[in-house]
Each structure stands twice: as C-alpha cells, then as structure tokens.
Length: 214
Image (tube, rainbow, N blue to C red; front, side, top):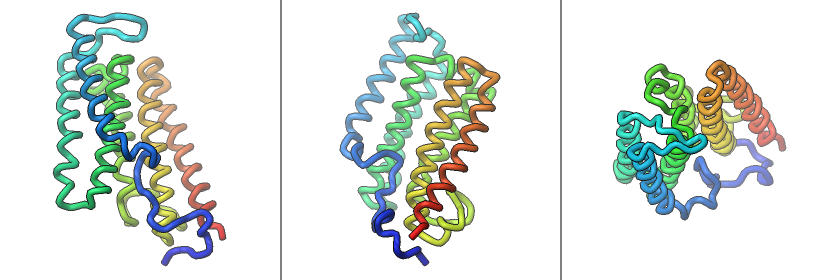
C-alpha cells in the first residue's frame, strides 16, 4: 500500500531512468559519440600519442574489450525490445550508452585507470562493477533482494522508484570517482569506496524519509 498525502513530493508515473529527462532525446548523439571516442582511442594507441594525462597505456586487450562492450551496449536493447515497452527500452539504452561514454573518456584521457593490469587485479573491475550495479535500479520493481530496501521504500512504490533512481546515480558517481582516485593514488581506492558507500546510505535514507513525510 502506498503512502498518501505526499502529492507535492511524489507524482504518478515517476520517470524511472538513470539520467535526467533532458537526455531522453540524446540517444543517437551518444551512440555516435561513443563510436567516435573509441576510434580516437585506437588512433591514440596506434600513433602512440603522449600529451599530458593522455598516455599510450592502452593495451590491445583493453581496446578490444571496449570495442566488444560497445557492440554489447548496442545489442542489449534489441534483446529487451520484445519484453519491455519501447520507452523503457530507450531509457535503458540511453543509460548504457552514457555509462559507456564516461568510461571511454577515461580510457582516452586517463587510460592508466583502466590498464589491463587493473582490470585483472579487480581495482578497475570493482569500480566498474559499482557503476553497473546502478544501471538496473531505476527499472526494477520492489523486491526483497535488490535495490534500496528501507521501511519507506517497501511501503510505497513511488518512494521506491525515486529512492532507487538516486541510489543508481550515486553508485555511478562512486564507481567512477573511486576508479579515478585509485588510478592516481592506489592506496586511497578502498577508502574512496567506503566513503562513497557511507554517503550512499545516508543520502538514500534521508531522501526516502523525506519523501515519506506528509
């Protein structure tokens, strides 16, 4: 049963997506941008570009992994089309493309954060995992296993949706920030994750409680 009396804070049909509504029309732009940035990464590697923070540290393996990931990002929405509404599929596709854009920018400008060695020893992998964990959160229904499960989110579908959108965005930020911190100061990687989790917990609890007030 949903809470009543909070129509100033909640509205029917909360727009569940990882990004603000403004970006809904930008899916095609992000697809082209991802392809362009990926080509730049390959060119930077082939030409051994070295300028400032742009260093030729991208291994062939890492570039191949990113190229495959780009194909997967384009393919997943096609697989979801028979099972979800077209609007929802487009929103998920946009989230995936924007997430990929952020990481391919890191690959281009701070490749040391995504060096194959980091992918193998889990530091980069853990940062990426945090970001990926947030992608499904704006779209899942209340359940007992995954999502921001609090007393207020359990009792209101609308509070669940809005709180999980916030949680998803924070997970995305935590994953990327911790990855960049770890790339330049490896000893601070774990600490940045811990601080991020604390912020995530406090922010979602406070937000859900605020939404539940009459």
